[in-house]
Image (cartoon, rainbow, N blue to C red; front, top):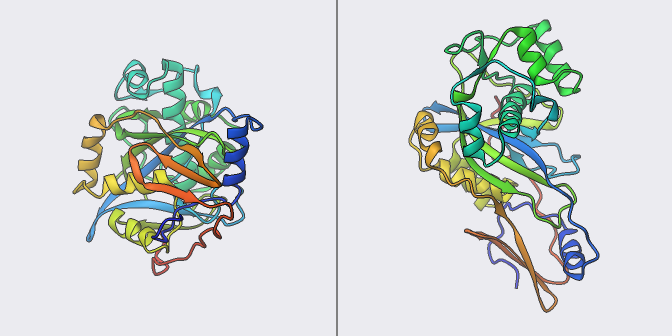
Length: 305
């Protein structure tokens, strides 16, 4: 039977057919692309708030869902020397479970995507500083070149004489898109505190709204079926809610389990059972005629960054 509670879990209507095709051996899984996403945090009156964006409903992947700034790894950032502050590449390689070149590319992707989609740059002219202002025509030209992949992030840092502040990031979780999804990502989730003097803005062409919201408010909206989200977003929000401050979340990151979470699907008669190991709340029982997908709404009162 279907889940009794109607929440805001993103669930594409084509998944049951794809799951059945995978079980029948007629669907070949797509190799997941490495990606990074950043939960940008700040302390607010109501507690720690996280910066989220709502993906345009026209987007092929997770349209209408609330998410964090993020995107795919650029392979051009894996072997070029970049100014680097904080834990070494070897430390990050061990933490992320990849080689050093891969670790550099993943961390670069996290910092680059935060700049591309939120206008916030976790880099500075020295190993103990952060740029204070990324507005202006020259900055915007470089940001646009990054978005269009005319400029790699390593080249951007070198051109600007900037040092990437890996010490401002904390690795939080790792989720892999299910094997039956047509667009697959192996995504590392990071936390970071909004640098002093910088402000977020909706710089992404993929989002129609951005908002600062507490994890508790966001998950409450999801539970009511008012905010559409993917399981990794909900799971990371629930974990963030236990951290009292933004700095507390960053301090808690080194102890977080980074074993990848990958959905499992099985057939029980005509019913598809979909589950995420260790996250029972997302288990879905889908009959042969799947329900209509959730429709996103805006319970945030129109508050934007």
